Image 1 (tube, rainbow, N blue to C red):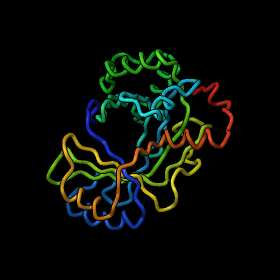
Image 2: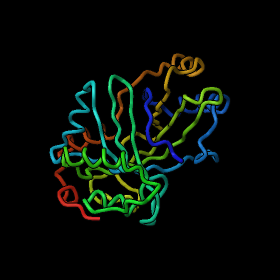
Image 3: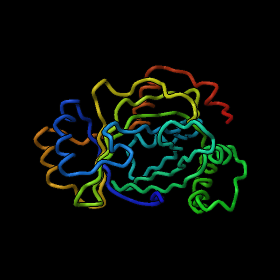
Amino acid sequence: MAVEVFNRVEQKYLLSQEDFDVLLPLLNQHMNPDAYNADGKGYLISNLYFDTSSDELIIKSLEKPAYKEKLRLRSYGQVKDFSETVYLEIKKKFDGVVYKRRTQLTLRQAYDFIQGRDIPRDDEKINYQVLEEIKNMMLRYELKPKVFIAYERLAFFSKTDSDFRLTLDKNILTRRNDLKLESEIYGEKLLKDGEWIMEAKAFKSFPLWFAHFLTKRKIYRTSFSKYGNEFTKYKTSGSVKTDMEKNYEF
């Protein structure tokens, strides 16, 4: 069963293709690949991010407050059927520590929940406590889907420290129309070709070999946020809100 509630420290870094090429042998030496990218090809993650009509959550997040929160609907791989499993999750950050709570649903159940429709109360796969928390958040902010973000991910777990994990994302695509997980994967690029967003995740500290890699390559922490960077680009472009943002129906 997937972990549904956890907290950890997360730090992000922007890597060039050259940085990644130097890192990869270290990953093979010190870490094991996630089951989804055991063949080295990585896997697809798609998300629908929720916000208010006035973009309250992302605007607040970009102000770098001590506390912030967001809600997203996530799928792993290309969703092709409404019976497939997706994850509805709240992600909160306070004083540098990330807290995530999520529950799995079928895509149909998730869409019904978002639209305020009832879902079965006897589904043992659903964490109803988390779902109630998500419901309260949606009602408190009057949240709705605002942006689709997909990317390819490689994930690794430390061979000696189960608390340490690395994810590397590339080919980040975003769009503000066709806000459905079952649609084709397309959108505007958020990174340059060859760039990666690396996220280091741990409950305590990072291992020395990783710290040495960062120092030698002169790689420094960044506050890169996929939704945050998408929103900044969206506002800068002068785009107008789409009909899908104003009235969505699944």
